[in-house]
Image 1: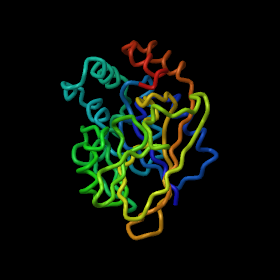
Image 2: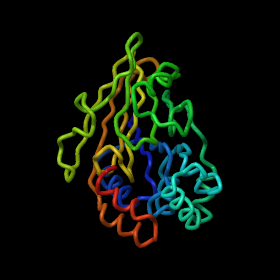
Image 3: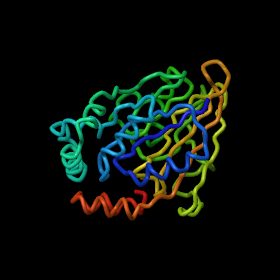
Image 4: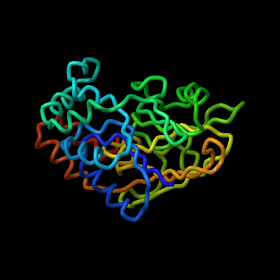
Length: 264
C-alpha cells in the first residue's frame, strides 16, 4: 500500500496541479491531506474541490477553520487575516460545506496518526527537536504525520535518545544543494523500534528555503504497528510566477505573492 501525504496547499492551484502531474508516474492507493487546503492563495475553490474529490481523509488546518469563520482570526497577523477575509468571500457553498466538515487531529488511520500542527495542539508548530519530544514520546503509533510548519522532513525518536532531525543528509534542509528547477525525491527508510514525526512539506507555500511544491509517499512496513517501511519526500517545480500574478490580481497582500519565489 502506498499513501500520498499532502499538506498546506493554501489555495495554490499551480502548485497542486504540478504535484498531480508528477504523481501520474507514481502509483498510490490513498491520499491523506493534513490541512490548510485554503488561505493565502488565489484558488481556494479549485483546491478544495480537488481535495474533496481525491483525499480519503483531510484533517482540519487552522486556516481551514478560520476561513469559514473569519471572526476567529483575531490572533492571525494582518497579512494572514487579510487573506482569511478574502478567502471567506470567495468560497462556494460546496467549499464551505467541505471545510466545515473537516475533523480535527490527531486522528488514527492505517496504524499511523494524522494531525495538522502538533498532535498535542493543532495550532502549535513543531520546528525544533525539543518541540517534537513530547509528541514523539506520547505517540500512539510509530509514524505520526503533521503539517503546519511548511518545512519538509521531521524528527525521529528511539527510547533513551533525544529526538533527532530527519533530513536528506543530516543537515538542515536549507543546505540542500539540488537546483530548485529540478524535480527531486529523497528516500527515508523507517527503522523498527523508532518513532517518527514527519512532515510532507507544503504544497502551496514552502518555508524551508526551497520554493518547489512538496509532498510525500509512504509505504508502510510489515511489522507490528506497521513499523518500518519507507517514505519518499518529493520536491516539484511549478509555475510560481503565475500563482503570484493571480494573488496580486486578486488584491491579496503582495507579500503572499513575493514569498513564493523565495520559499520562505
